Length: 210
Image (cartoon, rainbow, N blue to C red):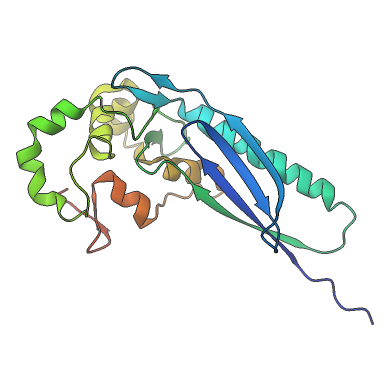
């Protein structure tokens, strides 16, 4: 009898950067099979650097759909099963606020480069600094905490969602994971969590004082 056809493995690398979203599909030999990319728009002033969070999601979704369509077309008629495993790479300190029920973005994706709330951070430096050693990072407006604070204080949709107990906020990777998974997974890895300045790297937990 002929041997059973083996299960084929593919690896989908999703890269969401400051200029574009990309999807690269690799085979078992680490060779690129298909790739797709889509540019995203940036709103940029002196201190404000942000993106449309929905545009980011749809750009990445478009790239995924394109490479998967091409893979399925390539394998049409092939009796072997195939499995695709995915990884996600993003701008770690970029943050998004969204609705925990609908998944709708409640404001822009605020870039890690954004420093609109730097004055508040400076005014509260003496109060915050004693806790920062837990993060392994220095106090900087480029990280997520003060961006989240600014959203909760200034964006009407975020304020209302907070009152309705419908607010979720976190790194861009969390927003994309929530929107891309059927289960609407709310999770983050330590490398992204630490960039919020709300995560204690020594205990590997969110920290109440921070």
